[in-house]
Length: 123
Image (cartoon, rainbow, N blue to C red; front, side, top):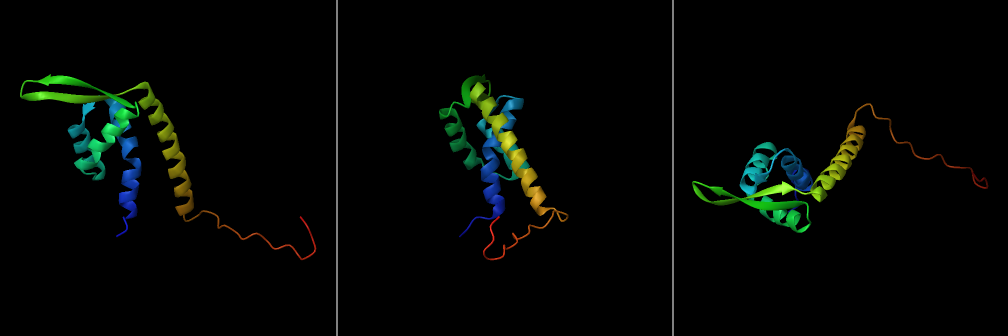
């Protein structure tokens, strides 16, 4: 069964969304998952492997915060590499969405086929 475009788009921007959330404030994985579930409908199970990958890529680092109501919580924060990745991915997303919007716009010029050159002539 093929995935819908919505699922593919969500998976494609999930890392960017996590970086953007962590740029605003340090957070723990469940809180990130809850915010993304509310915002774009991504499930919690998708976040944990992504957070591990982002940590191994050096984009985020972790620290523990003690809790009076249970075990310590692992918080994530952006590293310099994470901030650089956020800037690069934000620019890529902006360029991509601008290009897609131009293609989808009803007033976008139509792509014209190249005109054929008469035989025996060169450009």
